[in-house]
Length: 176
Image (tube, rainbow, N blue to C red; front, side, top):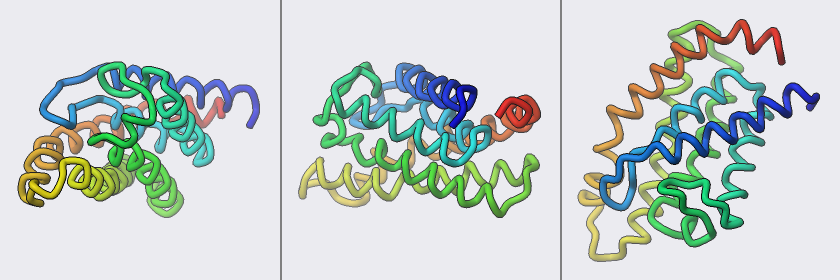
């Protein structure tokens, strides 16, 4: 990576942290803007850059820096109810970068990339949420707490990211 690519990668790590501090607490899994910036990283950065940015974000949080929602950090957060969603960000970026290679670089393609990639956050998130909440929680209750409240917001974040990326992609292509 050259210095510009490294700078943009670091900038997106900062965006992820800012997104995690923009919180609406609703039960064990809060609503955050981190997904919006994850989606933007997929669309605007080179594949390796977005993967590295998310990996750095997760590692910083696991090491105890207060980068996760509500200013939390540490391995206990990764092992807690939101840990599967955090790891799901990494899977989201991998899937998004694969889709970016095969789909057109237009608004419709960007929306498909962000929506489909965003859906890959949920399987790990829900599995880990169910595990951490224990055997007393049904799958129905897990979906009520860890999926349904977020679907519309995540769809809106995916579309917003696609629109923002489409508007700013020429700048990023020119500078990366």
